[in-house]
Length: 312
Length: 219
Picture 1 (spheres, one colour):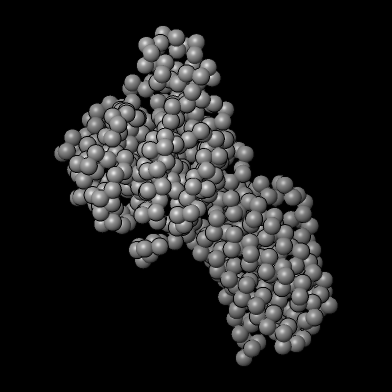
Picture 2 (cartoon, chains in turn purple, green):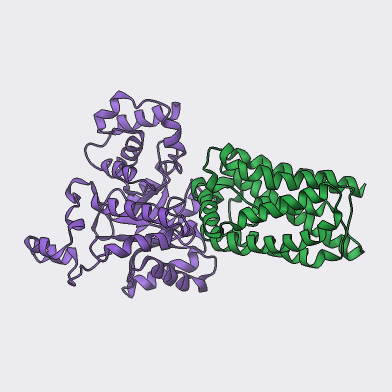
Protein backbone atom coordinates (compact mmCIF):
# COMPACT_ATOMS: atom_id res chain seq x y z
CA UNK A 1 0.00 0.00 0.00
CA UNK A 2 1.31 3.40 -0.93
CA UNK A 3 0.97 5.35 2.23
CA UNK A 4 0.84 9.06 1.67
CA UNK A 5 3.50 10.96 3.51
CA UNK A 6 2.45 13.64 5.94
CA UNK A 7 2.33 16.19 3.14
CA UNK A 8 -0.05 14.15 1.03
CA UNK A 9 2.32 12.77 -1.59
CA UNK A 10 3.16 9.10 -1.73
CA UNK A 11 6.76 7.98 -2.04
CA UNK A 12 5.97 6.50 -5.43
CA UNK A 13 4.27 9.71 -6.60
CA UNK A 14 7.26 11.75 -5.53
CA UNK A 15 9.63 9.45 -7.38
CA UNK A 16 7.33 9.28 -10.41
CA UNK A 17 7.22 13.04 -10.70
CA UNK A 18 10.97 13.19 -10.68
CA UNK A 19 10.92 14.92 -7.36
CA UNK A 20 13.43 12.62 -5.73
CA UNK A 21 15.72 15.53 -4.85
CA UNK A 22 12.90 16.90 -2.71
CA UNK A 23 12.61 13.68 -0.73
CA UNK A 24 14.76 14.83 2.16
CA UNK A 25 12.28 17.60 2.88
CA UNK A 26 9.20 15.45 2.31
CA UNK A 27 9.93 12.10 3.87
CA UNK A 28 10.91 11.50 7.47
CA UNK A 29 14.37 10.06 8.18
CA UNK A 30 13.13 6.47 8.65
CA UNK A 31 12.05 6.14 5.02
CA UNK A 32 15.27 7.64 3.80
CA UNK A 33 17.28 5.19 5.83
CA UNK A 34 16.04 2.32 3.68
CA UNK A 35 18.78 0.73 1.63
CA UNK A 36 16.01 -0.37 -0.74
CA UNK A 37 18.25 -0.65 -3.75
CA UNK A 38 20.39 -3.22 -1.99
CA UNK A 39 17.50 -5.55 -1.25
CA UNK A 40 16.54 -8.06 -3.87
CA UNK A 41 13.26 -6.97 -5.48
CA UNK A 42 10.86 -9.30 -7.21
CA UNK A 43 8.03 -8.36 -9.54
CA UNK A 44 4.42 -9.17 -8.93
CA UNK A 45 3.64 -10.83 -12.25
CA UNK A 46 0.11 -9.46 -12.64
CA UNK A 47 1.23 -5.81 -12.50
CA UNK A 48 4.99 -5.73 -12.67
CA UNK A 49 5.16 -3.88 -9.34
CA UNK A 50 8.38 -4.70 -7.52
CA UNK A 51 8.46 -5.64 -3.85
CA UNK A 52 11.37 -6.66 -1.61
CA UNK A 53 11.90 -10.41 -1.60
CA UNK A 54 11.88 -10.58 2.20
CA UNK A 55 8.68 -9.77 4.04
CA UNK A 56 7.63 -10.08 7.66
CA UNK A 57 5.29 -12.78 8.94
CA UNK A 58 3.41 -12.42 12.21
CA UNK A 59 2.22 -15.96 13.07
CA UNK A 60 2.97 -16.63 16.79
CA UNK A 61 5.71 -13.98 17.06
CA UNK A 62 3.40 -10.95 17.09
CA UNK A 63 0.65 -12.64 19.10
CA UNK A 64 1.72 -11.11 22.41
CA UNK A 65 -1.66 -10.03 23.72
CA UNK A 66 -1.76 -6.84 25.75
CA UNK A 67 1.80 -7.08 27.05
CA UNK A 68 3.15 -3.52 26.67
CA UNK A 69 6.82 -4.58 26.73
CA UNK A 70 6.34 -7.30 24.13
CA UNK A 71 4.32 -4.91 21.96
CA UNK A 72 7.12 -2.38 22.15
CA UNK A 73 9.61 -5.06 21.04
CA UNK A 74 7.35 -5.93 18.08
CA UNK A 75 7.20 -2.25 17.16
CA UNK A 76 11.00 -2.16 17.17
CA UNK A 77 11.04 -5.15 14.84
CA UNK A 78 8.62 -3.43 12.45
CA UNK A 79 10.67 -0.26 12.53
CA UNK A 80 13.88 -2.19 11.85
CA UNK A 81 12.11 -4.06 9.05
CA UNK A 82 11.23 -0.84 7.24
CA UNK A 83 14.59 0.73 8.00
CA UNK A 84 16.22 -2.31 6.41
CA UNK A 85 14.21 -1.97 3.21
CA UNK A 86 11.29 -4.32 3.94
CA UNK A 87 7.74 -3.63 2.83
CA UNK A 88 5.40 -6.63 2.96
CA UNK A 89 3.89 -7.52 6.34
CA UNK A 90 1.55 -10.50 6.47
CA UNK A 91 -1.07 -11.35 9.08
CA UNK A 92 -4.44 -13.00 9.56
CA UNK A 93 -7.50 -12.78 11.79
CA UNK A 94 -6.44 -16.25 12.93
CA UNK A 95 -3.25 -14.91 14.52
CA UNK A 96 -4.73 -13.79 17.84
CA UNK A 97 -3.55 -10.32 18.78
CA UNK A 98 -1.08 -9.99 15.89
CA UNK A 99 -3.26 -7.55 13.94
CA UNK A 100 -3.61 -4.94 16.73
CA UNK A 101 0.07 -5.39 17.54
CA UNK A 102 0.93 -4.56 13.92
CA UNK A 103 -1.46 -1.60 14.05
CA UNK A 104 0.22 -0.32 17.19
CA UNK A 105 3.63 -0.69 15.55
CA UNK A 106 2.52 1.15 12.41
CA UNK A 107 0.73 4.00 14.15
CA UNK A 108 3.81 6.03 15.16
CA UNK A 109 5.30 5.55 11.69
CA UNK A 110 2.34 7.31 10.16
CA UNK A 111 2.43 7.24 6.39
CA UNK A 112 6.19 7.49 6.23
CA UNK A 113 6.84 3.84 5.41
CA UNK A 114 6.17 2.05 2.11
CA UNK A 115 4.03 -0.67 3.69
CA UNK A 116 2.68 -3.46 1.53
CA UNK A 117 -0.10 -4.85 3.70
CA UNK A 118 -0.98 -8.51 3.21
CA UNK A 119 -4.00 -9.77 5.14
CA UNK A 120 -6.34 -12.70 4.98
CA UNK A 121 -10.00 -13.51 5.27
CA UNK A 122 -10.53 -16.51 7.50
CA UNK A 123 -14.11 -17.51 8.09
CA UNK A 124 -16.29 -20.33 6.88
CA UNK A 125 -19.16 -17.89 6.44
CA UNK A 126 -19.21 -15.86 3.23
CA UNK A 127 -21.53 -13.35 4.88
CA UNK A 128 -19.02 -12.63 7.65
CA UNK A 129 -16.12 -12.01 5.28
CA UNK A 130 -16.60 -8.25 4.70
CA UNK A 131 -17.11 -7.52 8.41
CA UNK A 132 -14.01 -9.50 9.27
CA UNK A 133 -11.96 -7.64 6.65
CA UNK A 134 -13.20 -4.32 8.00
CA UNK A 135 -12.26 -5.34 11.52
CA UNK A 136 -8.80 -6.37 10.32
CA UNK A 137 -8.40 -3.04 8.53
CA UNK A 138 -9.35 -1.19 11.70
CA UNK A 139 -6.77 -3.20 13.68
CA UNK A 140 -4.03 -2.31 11.21
CA UNK A 141 -5.17 1.31 10.98
CA UNK A 142 -4.72 1.44 7.20
CA UNK A 143 -7.13 2.90 4.64
CA UNK A 144 -7.17 -0.34 2.68
CA UNK A 145 -5.16 -3.50 2.22
CA UNK A 146 -2.79 -4.11 -0.65
CA UNK A 147 -3.38 -7.85 -0.66
CA UNK A 148 -6.17 -9.97 0.76
CA UNK A 149 -5.81 -13.72 0.70
CA UNK A 150 -8.25 -16.52 1.43
CA UNK A 151 -6.68 -18.18 4.45
CA UNK A 152 -6.09 -21.92 4.13
CA UNK A 153 -8.60 -22.11 1.24
CA UNK A 154 -11.41 -21.70 3.78
CA UNK A 155 -14.67 -21.10 1.87
CA UNK A 156 -12.62 -19.88 -1.09
CA UNK A 157 -15.52 -20.41 -3.52
CA UNK A 158 -17.45 -17.68 -1.66
CA UNK A 159 -14.60 -15.37 -0.69
CA UNK A 160 -12.76 -15.13 -4.01
CA UNK A 161 -15.67 -13.49 -5.90
CA UNK A 162 -16.08 -11.03 -3.01
CA UNK A 163 -12.36 -10.17 -3.13
CA UNK A 164 -12.52 -9.82 -6.89
CA UNK A 165 -15.38 -7.34 -6.50
CA UNK A 166 -13.35 -5.38 -3.96
CA UNK A 167 -10.44 -5.31 -6.36
CA UNK A 168 -12.50 -4.12 -9.30
CA UNK A 169 -14.07 -1.45 -7.04
CA UNK A 170 -10.58 -0.17 -6.21
CA UNK A 171 -10.82 -1.19 -2.55
CA UNK A 172 -8.05 -3.73 -2.88
CA UNK A 173 -5.00 -4.05 -5.09
CA UNK A 174 -4.32 -7.77 -5.13
CA UNK A 175 -6.05 -11.01 -4.21
CA UNK A 176 -4.56 -14.31 -3.23
CA UNK A 177 -5.02 -17.68 -1.62
CA UNK A 178 -2.99 -19.47 1.02
CA UNK A 179 -2.16 -22.84 2.42
CA UNK A 180 0.59 -24.08 4.70
CA UNK A 181 2.60 -27.15 5.54
CA UNK A 182 1.80 -28.85 2.27
CA UNK A 183 -1.92 -29.20 2.86
CA UNK A 184 -4.50 -29.35 0.08
CA UNK A 185 -2.03 -28.90 -2.72
CA UNK A 186 -4.30 -30.67 -5.19
CA UNK A 187 -7.08 -28.20 -4.54
CA UNK A 188 -4.64 -25.30 -4.64
CA UNK A 189 -3.43 -26.50 -8.02
CA UNK A 190 -7.01 -26.65 -9.26
CA UNK A 191 -7.64 -23.09 -8.07
CA UNK A 192 -4.48 -21.83 -9.74
CA UNK A 193 -5.58 -23.45 -12.99
CA UNK A 194 -9.17 -22.21 -12.92
CA UNK A 195 -9.21 -18.91 -10.99
CA UNK A 196 -7.54 -15.56 -11.45
CA UNK A 197 -5.46 -14.66 -8.43
CA UNK A 198 -2.43 -12.39 -8.05
CA UNK A 199 -0.76 -14.26 -5.20
CA UNK A 200 -0.48 -17.73 -3.79
CA UNK A 201 1.03 -18.37 -0.38
CA UNK A 202 2.48 -21.75 0.53
CA UNK A 203 5.13 -23.48 2.61
CA UNK A 204 8.51 -24.02 1.05
CA UNK A 205 11.96 -24.60 2.55
CA UNK A 206 14.89 -26.99 2.08
CA UNK A 207 12.98 -29.79 3.83
CA UNK A 208 9.44 -29.09 2.55
CA UNK A 209 9.91 -29.13 -1.21
CA UNK A 210 6.67 -30.61 -2.47
CA UNK A 211 5.69 -27.25 -3.99
CA UNK A 212 8.57 -27.60 -6.44
CA UNK A 213 6.83 -30.46 -8.19
CA UNK A 214 3.74 -28.70 -9.54
CA UNK A 215 2.73 -25.55 -7.67
CA UNK A 216 5.79 -23.37 -8.14
CA UNK A 217 6.09 -24.11 -11.88
CA UNK A 218 2.34 -23.62 -12.28
CA UNK A 219 2.40 -20.29 -10.43
CA UNK A 220 5.18 -19.12 -12.72
CA UNK A 221 3.31 -20.30 -15.80
CA UNK A 222 0.08 -18.60 -14.68
CA UNK A 223 1.78 -15.35 -13.65
CA UNK A 224 0.95 -15.71 -9.97
CA UNK A 225 3.28 -14.21 -7.36
CA UNK A 226 4.39 -16.63 -4.65
CA UNK A 227 4.70 -15.79 -0.95
CA UNK A 228 6.55 -18.44 1.04
CA UNK A 229 5.57 -19.10 4.65
CA UNK A 230 7.12 -21.27 7.37
CA UNK A 231 10.59 -20.98 5.89
CA UNK A 232 12.02 -22.02 9.27
CA UNK A 233 9.20 -24.42 10.23
CA UNK A 234 8.16 -22.00 13.00
CA UNK A 235 11.75 -21.82 14.23
CA UNK A 236 12.17 -25.59 14.67
CA UNK A 237 14.54 -25.77 11.74
CA UNK A 238 16.83 -22.93 12.82
CA UNK A 239 16.80 -24.15 16.44
CA UNK A 240 17.82 -27.64 15.33
CA UNK A 241 20.49 -26.32 12.98
CA UNK A 242 21.93 -24.01 15.64
CA UNK A 243 23.63 -27.07 17.16
CA UNK A 244 25.72 -27.48 14.02
CA UNK A 245 28.41 -25.20 12.61
CA UNK A 246 27.56 -23.38 9.41
CA UNK A 247 29.45 -25.04 6.55
CA UNK A 248 32.32 -23.04 5.13
CA UNK A 249 30.81 -23.12 1.65
CA UNK A 250 27.85 -21.01 2.90
CA UNK A 251 30.11 -18.02 2.36
CA UNK A 252 30.05 -18.74 -1.38
CA UNK A 253 26.43 -17.57 -1.45
CA UNK A 254 26.99 -14.82 1.09
CA UNK A 255 25.20 -16.57 3.95
CA UNK A 256 26.51 -15.93 7.45
CA UNK A 257 23.87 -17.99 9.28
CA UNK A 258 21.64 -21.02 8.80
CA UNK A 259 18.64 -18.69 8.57
CA UNK A 260 20.20 -16.85 5.66
CA UNK A 261 21.18 -20.09 3.97
CA UNK A 262 17.56 -21.28 4.17
CA UNK A 263 16.18 -17.96 2.93
CA UNK A 264 18.65 -17.85 0.06
CA UNK A 265 17.61 -21.39 -0.88
CA UNK A 266 13.97 -20.24 -0.97
CA UNK A 267 14.61 -16.98 -2.81
CA UNK A 268 16.77 -18.68 -5.41
CA UNK A 269 13.73 -20.47 -6.79
CA UNK A 270 12.66 -18.37 -9.76
CA UNK A 271 8.96 -18.67 -8.97
CA UNK A 272 9.30 -17.23 -5.45
CA UNK A 273 8.38 -13.59 -5.06
CA UNK A 274 8.74 -13.08 -1.34
CA UNK A 275 9.50 -15.08 1.81
CA UNK A 276 7.89 -13.99 5.07
CA UNK A 277 9.95 -15.22 8.03
CA UNK A 278 8.46 -14.20 11.37
CA UNK A 279 10.52 -12.96 14.26
CA UNK A 280 10.32 -10.89 17.40
CA UNK A 281 13.99 -9.94 17.42
CA UNK A 282 15.47 -6.92 15.69
CA UNK A 283 18.75 -8.79 15.09
CA UNK A 284 16.86 -11.57 13.32
CA UNK A 285 14.84 -9.25 11.11
CA UNK A 286 18.08 -7.60 9.99
CA UNK A 287 19.65 -10.99 9.42
CA UNK A 288 16.64 -12.09 7.37
CA UNK A 289 16.69 -8.95 5.24
CA UNK A 290 20.39 -9.42 4.63
CA UNK A 291 19.59 -12.76 2.99
CA UNK A 292 18.07 -10.78 0.13
CA UNK A 293 21.37 -9.10 -0.56
CA UNK A 294 24.36 -10.57 -2.33
CA UNK A 295 24.50 -13.74 -4.41
CA UNK A 296 21.87 -16.46 -4.47
CA UNK A 297 22.71 -20.14 -4.81
CA UNK A 298 22.60 -21.77 -8.23
CA UNK A 299 20.84 -25.07 -8.82
CA UNK A 300 23.77 -27.19 -7.67
CA UNK A 301 24.26 -25.05 -4.56
CA UNK A 302 20.57 -25.27 -3.76
CA UNK A 303 20.74 -29.06 -3.87
CA UNK A 304 23.76 -28.96 -1.62
CA UNK A 305 21.89 -26.78 0.88
CA UNK A 306 18.89 -29.10 0.90
CA UNK A 307 21.07 -32.21 1.14
CA UNK A 308 23.15 -30.79 3.98
CA UNK A 309 20.19 -29.56 6.01
CA UNK A 310 18.28 -32.78 5.37
CA UNK A 311 21.20 -34.82 6.71
CA UNK A 312 21.55 -32.87 9.97
CA UNK B 1 -11.52 -28.72 8.44
CA UNK B 2 -10.32 -30.96 5.65
CA UNK B 3 -7.29 -33.24 5.87
CA UNK B 4 -7.79 -33.05 9.64
CA UNK B 5 -5.56 -36.06 10.14
CA UNK B 6 -2.58 -34.02 8.97
CA UNK B 7 -2.91 -31.54 11.84
CA UNK B 8 -0.79 -31.91 14.97
CA UNK B 9 -1.47 -30.27 18.34
CA UNK B 10 1.37 -27.86 17.61
CA UNK B 11 -0.58 -26.54 14.62
CA UNK B 12 -3.14 -25.10 17.02
CA UNK B 13 -0.61 -23.46 19.30
CA UNK B 14 -0.72 -19.83 18.25
CA UNK B 15 1.54 -18.25 20.86
CA UNK B 16 5.11 -18.68 22.09
CA UNK B 17 5.82 -20.16 25.55
CA UNK B 18 7.43 -16.94 26.77
CA UNK B 19 4.28 -15.04 25.79
CA UNK B 20 2.20 -17.49 27.83
CA UNK B 21 4.36 -17.27 30.95
CA UNK B 22 4.55 -13.52 30.72
CA UNK B 23 0.75 -13.41 31.18
CA UNK B 24 1.24 -14.65 34.75
CA UNK B 25 3.89 -12.03 35.45
CA UNK B 26 1.60 -9.26 34.26
CA UNK B 27 -1.41 -10.68 36.10
CA UNK B 28 0.48 -11.21 39.37
CA UNK B 29 1.74 -7.63 39.25
CA UNK B 30 -1.70 -6.21 38.44
CA UNK B 31 -3.51 -8.10 41.21
CA UNK B 32 -0.82 -8.18 43.88
CA UNK B 33 -1.23 -9.25 46.67
CA UNK B 34 -4.47 -11.08 45.85
CA UNK B 35 -2.65 -14.21 44.67
CA UNK B 36 -0.64 -14.44 47.84
CA UNK B 37 -3.74 -13.87 49.96
CA UNK B 38 -5.71 -16.55 48.08
CA UNK B 39 -2.81 -18.97 48.42
CA UNK B 40 -2.60 -18.36 52.17
CA UNK B 41 -6.37 -18.80 52.57
CA UNK B 42 -6.40 -22.07 50.63
CA UNK B 43 -3.33 -23.28 52.53
CA UNK B 44 -5.15 -22.55 55.78
CA UNK B 45 -8.15 -24.43 54.40
CA UNK B 46 -5.91 -27.38 53.52
CA UNK B 47 -4.44 -27.50 57.02
CA UNK B 48 -7.88 -27.18 58.64
CA UNK B 49 -9.25 -30.05 56.56
CA UNK B 50 -6.12 -32.14 57.15
CA UNK B 51 -6.58 -31.67 60.91
CA UNK B 52 -10.17 -32.84 60.63
CA UNK B 53 -12.00 -29.51 60.75
CA UNK B 54 -14.33 -30.50 57.97
CA UNK B 55 -16.67 -27.60 58.49
CA UNK B 56 -13.98 -25.53 56.87
CA UNK B 57 -15.10 -27.08 53.57
CA UNK B 58 -18.20 -24.88 53.43
CA UNK B 59 -16.49 -21.48 53.46
CA UNK B 60 -13.92 -23.17 51.21
CA UNK B 61 -16.65 -23.74 48.61
CA UNK B 62 -17.62 -20.07 48.64
CA UNK B 63 -13.96 -19.17 48.30
CA UNK B 64 -13.55 -21.60 45.40
CA UNK B 65 -16.60 -20.14 43.62
CA UNK B 66 -15.08 -16.67 43.91
CA UNK B 67 -11.61 -17.77 42.80
CA UNK B 68 -12.94 -19.78 39.83
CA UNK B 69 -14.93 -16.76 38.67
CA UNK B 70 -11.84 -14.57 39.07
CA UNK B 71 -9.80 -16.95 36.96
CA UNK B 72 -12.50 -17.15 34.29
CA UNK B 73 -12.73 -13.40 33.91
CA UNK B 74 -9.51 -11.96 35.26
CA UNK B 75 -7.02 -14.30 33.65
CA UNK B 76 -8.61 -16.43 30.95
CA UNK B 77 -10.98 -13.90 29.40
CA UNK B 78 -8.91 -10.75 29.78
CA UNK B 79 -5.40 -12.09 29.18
CA UNK B 80 -5.46 -15.56 27.68
CA UNK B 81 -8.23 -15.22 25.10
CA UNK B 82 -6.43 -12.37 23.26
CA UNK B 83 -3.57 -14.75 22.43
CA UNK B 84 -5.65 -17.92 22.11
CA UNK B 85 -9.14 -17.63 20.71
CA UNK B 86 -9.80 -21.26 21.70
CA UNK B 87 -9.51 -20.21 25.34
CA UNK B 88 -13.02 -18.73 25.22
CA UNK B 89 -14.24 -22.25 25.95
CA UNK B 90 -11.83 -22.49 28.87
CA UNK B 91 -13.24 -19.26 30.31
CA UNK B 92 -16.67 -20.86 30.02
CA UNK B 93 -15.52 -23.98 31.87
CA UNK B 94 -14.14 -21.92 34.79
CA UNK B 95 -17.32 -19.85 34.86
CA UNK B 96 -19.35 -23.06 35.00
CA UNK B 97 -17.14 -24.32 37.82
CA UNK B 98 -17.80 -21.09 39.73
CA UNK B 99 -21.52 -21.61 39.27
CA UNK B 100 -21.20 -25.23 40.36
CA UNK B 101 -19.46 -24.22 43.58
CA UNK B 102 -22.26 -21.73 44.30
CA UNK B 103 -24.89 -24.42 43.85
CA UNK B 104 -23.00 -27.09 45.80
CA UNK B 105 -23.06 -25.70 49.37
CA UNK B 106 -25.77 -28.18 50.33
CA UNK B 107 -23.13 -30.90 50.30
CA UNK B 108 -21.93 -32.39 53.55
CA UNK B 109 -18.28 -32.60 54.45
CA UNK B 110 -16.89 -36.14 54.31
CA UNK B 111 -13.46 -37.42 55.22
CA UNK B 112 -13.17 -40.57 53.14
CA UNK B 113 -11.13 -38.96 50.38
CA UNK B 114 -9.36 -36.56 52.68
CA UNK B 115 -5.82 -37.71 51.96
CA UNK B 116 -6.09 -37.34 48.19
CA UNK B 117 -7.95 -34.06 48.64
CA UNK B 118 -5.37 -32.67 51.02
CA UNK B 119 -2.58 -33.78 48.70
CA UNK B 120 -4.17 -31.87 45.82
CA UNK B 121 -4.72 -28.77 47.95
CA UNK B 122 -1.09 -28.83 49.07
CA UNK B 123 0.06 -29.35 45.48
CA UNK B 124 -1.95 -26.31 44.41
CA UNK B 125 -0.72 -24.06 47.22
CA UNK B 126 2.88 -25.18 47.70
CA UNK B 127 4.05 -26.88 44.51
CA UNK B 128 2.48 -24.76 41.79
CA UNK B 129 4.00 -21.44 42.81
CA UNK B 130 7.45 -23.06 42.78
CA UNK B 131 7.16 -24.57 39.33
CA UNK B 132 8.25 -21.34 37.69
CA UNK B 133 11.53 -21.45 39.63
CA UNK B 134 11.98 -25.17 38.94
CA UNK B 135 11.58 -24.45 35.25
CA UNK B 136 14.11 -21.63 35.33
CA UNK B 137 11.54 -18.88 35.03
CA UNK B 138 11.44 -15.90 37.41
CA UNK B 139 9.31 -16.20 40.52
CA UNK B 140 7.25 -13.20 39.39
CA UNK B 141 5.73 -15.64 36.85
CA UNK B 142 4.56 -17.99 39.63
CA UNK B 143 1.12 -19.52 39.19
CA UNK B 144 -0.99 -18.63 42.19
CA UNK B 145 -4.44 -19.81 43.17
CA UNK B 146 -7.17 -17.37 42.24
CA UNK B 147 -5.04 -15.81 39.54
CA UNK B 148 -3.77 -18.78 37.55
CA UNK B 149 -6.08 -21.45 36.12
CA UNK B 150 -4.16 -24.64 36.94
CA UNK B 151 -3.63 -24.30 40.70
CA UNK B 152 -7.18 -23.01 41.07
CA UNK B 153 -8.56 -26.05 39.27
CA UNK B 154 -6.35 -28.42 41.27
CA UNK B 155 -7.34 -26.77 44.56
CA UNK B 156 -10.95 -27.12 43.48
CA UNK B 157 -10.47 -30.84 42.86
CA UNK B 158 -8.80 -31.16 46.27
CA UNK B 159 -11.65 -29.44 48.04
CA UNK B 160 -14.19 -31.45 46.10
CA UNK B 161 -12.70 -34.67 47.48
CA UNK B 162 -13.36 -33.34 50.98
CA UNK B 163 -17.11 -32.93 50.53
CA UNK B 164 -19.89 -35.47 50.22
CA UNK B 165 -22.99 -34.58 48.22
CA UNK B 166 -26.08 -34.61 50.35
CA UNK B 167 -28.63 -35.47 47.67
CA UNK B 168 -28.94 -37.08 44.26
CA UNK B 169 -28.81 -33.66 42.63
CA UNK B 170 -25.83 -32.80 44.78
CA UNK B 171 -24.05 -35.97 43.69
CA UNK B 172 -24.68 -35.09 40.07
CA UNK B 173 -23.30 -31.62 40.65
CA UNK B 174 -20.32 -33.07 42.51
CA UNK B 175 -19.48 -35.32 39.55
CA UNK B 176 -20.02 -32.46 37.12
CA UNK B 177 -17.54 -30.34 39.07
CA UNK B 178 -15.09 -33.23 39.14
CA UNK B 179 -15.37 -33.72 35.38
CA UNK B 180 -14.92 -29.97 34.83
CA UNK B 181 -11.82 -29.92 37.01
CA UNK B 182 -10.34 -32.97 35.31
CA UNK B 183 -11.16 -31.54 31.88
CA UNK B 184 -9.42 -28.21 32.47
CA UNK B 185 -6.40 -30.09 33.87
CA UNK B 186 -6.25 -32.23 30.73
CA UNK B 187 -6.56 -29.15 28.51
CA UNK B 188 -3.72 -27.52 30.42
CA UNK B 189 -1.56 -30.66 30.23
CA UNK B 190 -2.13 -30.82 26.47
CA UNK B 191 -1.27 -27.14 26.05
CA UNK B 192 1.87 -27.34 28.19
CA UNK B 193 2.91 -30.58 26.50
CA UNK B 194 2.55 -28.97 23.08
CA UNK B 195 4.68 -26.11 24.36
CA UNK B 196 7.31 -28.70 25.40
CA UNK B 197 7.00 -27.64 29.02
CA UNK B 198 8.12 -30.21 31.57
CA UNK B 199 5.40 -29.22 34.03
CA UNK B 200 2.74 -30.64 31.70
CA UNK B 201 2.87 -33.71 33.93
CA UNK B 202 1.58 -31.73 36.93
CA UNK B 203 -2.03 -31.06 35.85
CA UNK B 204 -2.08 -34.56 34.37
CA UNK B 205 -1.03 -36.06 37.71
CA UNK B 206 -3.58 -33.92 39.56
CA UNK B 207 -6.37 -35.08 37.25
CA UNK B 208 -5.32 -38.72 37.71
CA UNK B 209 -5.23 -38.39 41.51
CA UNK B 210 -8.67 -36.76 41.61
CA UNK B 211 -10.24 -39.20 39.21
CA UNK B 212 -8.66 -42.20 40.96
CA UNK B 213 -9.89 -41.06 44.37
CA UNK B 214 -13.39 -40.39 43.07
CA UNK B 215 -13.64 -43.78 41.35
CA UNK B 216 -12.31 -45.57 44.46
CA UNK B 217 -14.98 -43.89 46.51
CA UNK B 218 -17.69 -44.88 44.07
CA UNK B 219 -16.46 -48.47 44.21
